[in-house]
Length: 112
Picture 1 (cartoon, one colour):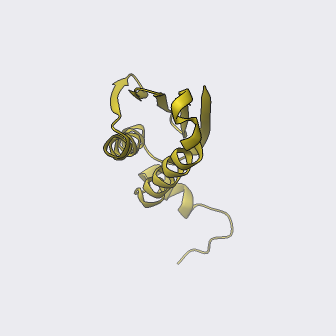
Picture 2 (tube, rainbow, N blue to C red; picture 1 turned 90 degrees about the vertical axis):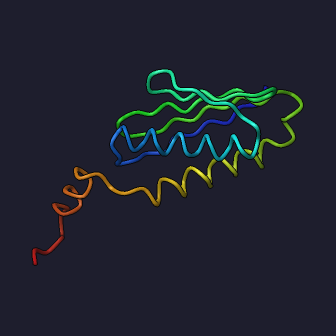
C-alpha cells in the first residue's frame, strides 16, 4: 500500500468546510470513478485500488488515502491532483463571519 496524507487548515464553518470536502470528492469521483459517503464529520471515498477519507474539523481538513499496488505508480499524479483541487477550493471559499471579524481586529490594522 502507498499512502497520501496531508492536512489543510481552514477558517470556515463546519458546514462550509464539509461542502468543500464534498466538492473535492465529487471532482475526484468524476476523474477517478470514486464513490463517496459521509459518516459523521468524515467523508469516505473508494473504488478498486483506492480507499480514503477526509475528516473535517472546526479548523482543518485531514486527508488520508491508501492506493493499492496497481495504482502506486500514479501516486504522485493523484496526490498533486487532490492537493491542487482542495487548495483551490479552500482559497475561493468565502470567509465565515468569525474569520472576517478576526481579520478586522488584526494587530496593525488602522481604523477608518
